[in-house]
Length: 347
Ligand code: SF4
Ligand code: SF4
Image 1 (spheres, rainbow, N blue to C red):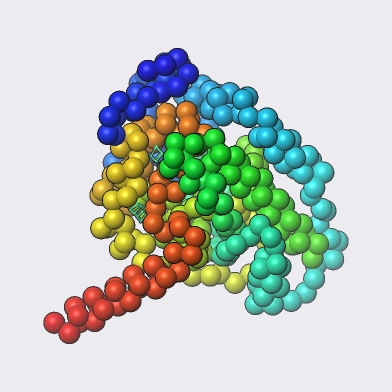
Image 2: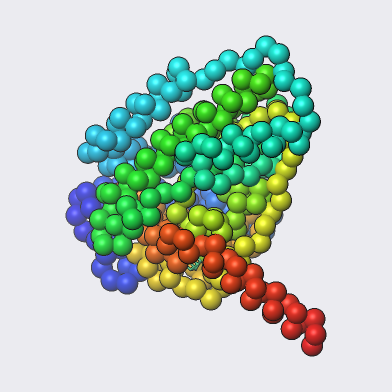
């Protein structure tokens, strides 16, 4: 164990750096408590990463900023650019609302999104109060729709982490933050231009009081399914992609949840579970806030993630993340599942 860097002592045995240990809360509630691990009653997600001033994880978040950003000048420029975009890049809402049906707006929105260089998959679903973190305001009244934007990460750069080089992967993740930030602002400006309200939440958007989850609406909007590595896997992009959202009152049509074969695949795959340095990925689904689902142990993951530029080994090691693999894997899994259900009906 070092002062600033942790060490892998053995399989699934990670010893964090002294300074990380110092910042880690020493008593409950731990991260898994905030996330509702073991809770039997449904509730909204807790404000783990975006808590109030007195939040016990704030020290850890400050350490994350210092460790990840201070020695990385390229990240400063990304953040500066996004701050400037937030200050000067938002267009006002046009005074006259364009008329049209929800179907027409959805078609135009899809064609705008298809042409955007940083958007590789999208979905729309109704905004719900339970997507807001606890203690945040209910955005669903003002903005009845949530548009989910997905952006593919550069796999070759991210997969450098499999060789022990986490810094390059960390820069890719940050580029993803920047590009989803731009994509969300562009989408929101496109909507505002037609007289409707829109609010972008890209990779680096900071709006206290408006934090919301992105994976649940993304799943509901048909982007993909929740996987054993705690992330969403899409049949187009695999597991290595980033999400952003735009809330709007433009009339739209919801997309539907799509089964893509991920859940079934994860039941018999152990790649991410084996490769996760601290053993944070469990082989079984767990009860989290009243729902049985895949879950990553936050308290085991956080030190490794923090000390290794976001880690992301569970994304790069996943077979679905290899470029071009996800569409055929999904097809294969869906065919296998259909055969299984035919056999069950016949017997
Ligand atoms: S980021 Fe993924 S692989 Fe890395 S420690 Fe966390 S769960 Fe494990
Ligand atoms: S590595 Fe395997 S178990 Fe883990 S998320 Fe990917 S498919 Fe699922």
